[in-house]
Length: 490
Image (cartoon, rainbow, N blue to C red):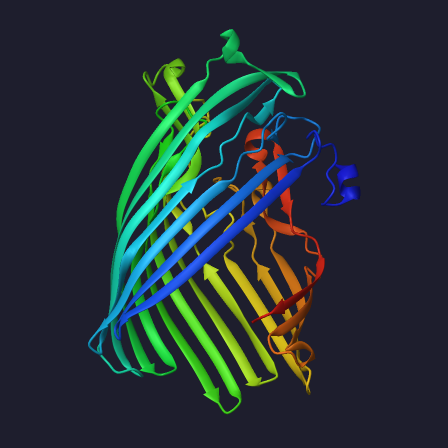
């Protein structure tokens, strides 16, 4: 610990990863939007997307020479590229002077890059074994149809507007994977214990289809061209998936859904060179069948622990109430200066959440009802200021400072959070100098920037296993960075 403190947060002591920590990413993203006017009141719009991601990460979770918490250890083979294709077709139209609508379909296809041998838990230091898998196939697709309409009871500048929309989604997820247990013969050679009849492999060939109707409804009242109030109610859902490391019967978790209510005011103000904007919103949500990490057990004979199957993973084990308020403002008393900011308060707590740390073991189940969401600060504040200085014949200089602060939060769902279950509040400051229309060239912008000016080291995340394993690791923020950017808009 003393040596680690001397080295600082960006240089780990005693890592057990052969070759050191490694993080590699290659991204390709293509988006195309095409619009076709069919008539004066009817338009066809198509949005196509293609994404290719190749990613591999090897890391030491606890920063010690013990291999037990290392991820993707040798001889793990980096996976191929993930590929995703999306296609959305919209028909947009207007009927009369008061009703407009959008209807269409959304389709998404995803295929994970398959891999060779993946050793993701190196337990050889403690138990002499490694666990890992071979991914044969992982695919998903999402197909949806939707329609939304707006009816304006007033005129363009004021009056009441009614909005309603529905969506029907079908999600299909499939997975084929083999889970194995190995012993290490050498740094680059593993022996599969299934080949000598010691520990059998688990072959998963899973497929599930999830279907859901979701909706949106709302009322909007326009006081005048610059001020309006609104109320919306909407329901969304997230598809289910698989726990790939669990025994048969515990692989699948189901969808989660959120019904949200929001009331808000939006306004813009202007008088000569003076301009301002103020927005505020209150929200409340009912969150059902929440996908949380917890423990499950199923016993053929509840009195005989030997008949129990034990699983740790993602399950629909919680419900919650979400409520809060958020607002933002912008103030520009003159063209050369602008200040603004945002603030939010949320009180997101589980209304039902039972977690049994050891399943059928002797520890009692934990009632986490009333506990806040993890990694969810109660307060967040951000402020910015921009000062512009015109340069005759050579464009404009603009200096911007961005400051943000967020409250402390909990990192582990536990009945009585301790210091190792919490993260301190932290702030961040970024500075940027832009030269717009540099050297008088329209479309040319040059920028010089510095991030994390105050050298904040706190970031969301960490290795929160103190309660179960006696280990506590804290994620660190990206260190201070300097950079230069050039941009030209044609």
